[in-house]
Amino acid sequence: MLRSMLLVPADDSYKINKAINAGADAVLIDLEDSVAESEKANARRVMGQAAIATLPIYVRVNAIHGEFFMDDIDAVLDMECEGIVIPKVESASDMKICHWFLSQMAHKRDRHASELDLIPILETAKGIANIREIITACPLVSRVSYGAGDLQADTGLVWTEDETELLPIRMSLVIESAAAGLLPPFDTPHWEFKDMDLLRESAQRSRRLGFGGKMCIHPAQIRVIHEAFSATAEELQWARQVVEEFEAAEAQGKACITVNGHMVDYAVAKRARNILAIPALDDSQT
Image 1 (cartoon, rainbow, N blue to C red):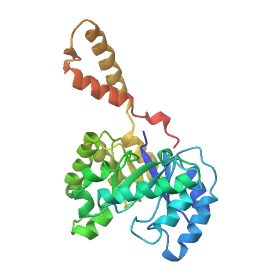
Image 2 (cartoon, one colour):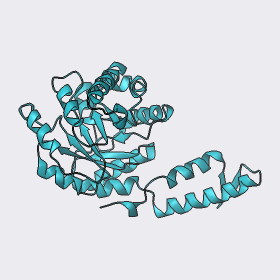
Image 3 (tube, one colour):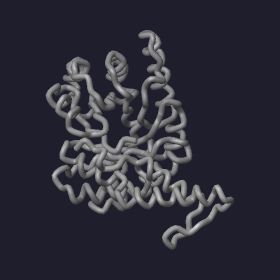
């Protein structure tokens, strides 16, 4: 379970090494938007020389149909990383192309594409409209994310402080991810990185909707995100009691009981078990 993924430009070794030690659950080295086109080749070289990390490292490559994608995949396969983040995915064929090319390049290195976790990012109206086809097109996809900033540019959507306009997009990702058996989706980064109150509200909102974590663009955001996506002491206490009492009742042939005045059935027991699988805040490295 990843709560946070810290975005860092691939062409800055100092920032990469700093990000590795910032306390995020994972680091996302970016070859795409944060790197100028003239610096793509240099960024791949710098990225490949980054310090070996003790936490999951992901790489965001450039878009599948662009001129940099193949070289990006080639560079990723030369380094140790957990997975690849694919931006601006719009169709099932995009993911099939990515899977095929990754498999071919991995085979040349006596590696298996299945070693890598793929996370598509949906950033256009077409991508959002094709969520189901995209996330089921490739067996390497573990979860999905989206980019609210690019969606604004593509659709005319205005991203306001209460994020009401993001609700249908977020719910679509949560429902389709659950239906496909994927991990809960990752929420879009919050670009107002100096306003921790807005970030906290955004992260808490997305967790209530069913998201598992949130991407971040600054180390200062990590603690707030971990607080929002970690199980609280009260939640853990409730979940443990529910699971313990329900399992005891089930052993006696009962499937519906009352715990602290509230009905507990299989659905509530499942929710309690899900909470027990969420990292506790004390597990955070921040």
